[in-house]
Amino acid sequence: MRYTPISSATYVNHRKALADQLLPASLAIFNSNDIMPTNGDGSMPFRQNSDLLYLSGVDQEESVLLLFPHCSNPAHREILLLKETSEEIAIWEGEKLTRDKATALSGIATVYWLDSLHTVLKALMAEADHVYLNSNEHTRRSIEVETRDMRFRKWITTEYPLHSYKRVSPIMHRLRSVKSLEEIEQMQKACKITEAGFRRVLGALKPGMLEYEIEAEYMHEFLRRGSRGFAYTPIVASGFNACVLHYIENNMPCKDGDVILMDVGAEYGNYASDMSRSIPANGRYTQRQKAVYNAVLRVMRAAMDLLRPGVFLADYHKQVGQLMEKELVDLGLLSMEELKKQSAAQPAYKKYFMHGTSHFIGLDVHDVGLWHEPIQAGNVFTVEPGIYIREESLGIRIENDILITEEGYVDLMGDIPIEAEEIEELMNA
Image (cartoon, rainbow, N blue to C red; front, side, top):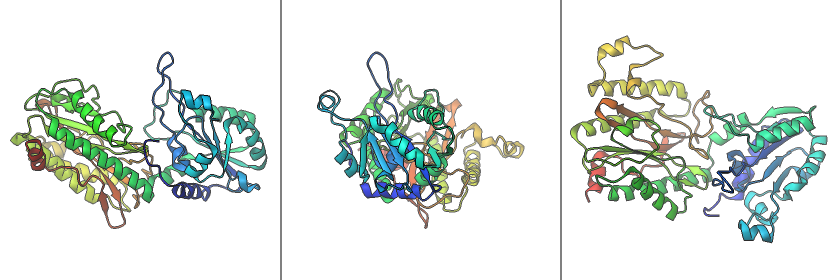
């Protein structure tokens, strides 16, 4: 394993928190993700199902977690089922989890091989009244490929049609949105790795460099520090490309006078970081570029101060929009007349700031969370305002990740250079 995993005690606590939310006589079932194919005999890098990982720490394909807190057999209240390892598998694929290693990692004493799943289920289903099944209920999901959870759901509801089936996702969203101490430590490690990558880029960037060469600088630093790479597809956007919000081609030269918008983040132990910085290709912002940059930075800092326990995210985003209105007027991009004519459905600032300011972050870069309930201590959010001026080929986005506390927040990226003058100084050192 490339990364240092969270302790088994944290996974034990995660499972207990879930068990406390289940109805009596309930069985909860979680499947790993598949290894996705490419072409021929190729496959994509494996990425574990975040819920199964959150509850067990098992970062391996063909794994199933069964939780039956009130089972009459104490040994069957928590069960892991794993792909059986062998000497041949070790030779061709590498070491897989043994029973003992799975127990040490997860804190789960009962570990079976996956081929015994149906036999184990027969005994559990005879005792269970309710079955909690997992599904992807992320508000921004786009599902075109059938997952193991989806296939399993079809099978079990056909095989056992008379049980009461429940959704476990709402419970998992609630639990995962409040980070435990060790989760925060993993995220802080990811942020520190991202910082190292950014500092490397500040020393390497020169006019004429290709966007993907900057991407390579980040990847080099991420890998050498124990990350498996980017937490999401990186954006390295020079000039007008920075005005394309999800630009990921990263194949154009960075011209003298361009500002390079970089939206990148390392992962560590499957936990994400998410940083945006906008830096001058030649090491110096123009007066206009710096004015726009500082406007975005002021909105970012004011937005951080708004994120507090008890605040609703919908209200927060409206307040950030009002902050952005003032900056856009001061920059000469909006007039007071335009503000008077705007509608609530289509605020005037959206012409230059089209996206939201914050999202949950954790095991996924766009992590699950409770958008309809007040912010809680332990939530972790991005804060990422931006101004995109297509007619000036200028896009500025600045983004840090912050942990909400009872007293306010902790900036997990507080050590990453952010002031325009500091960035210029480091680029010209």
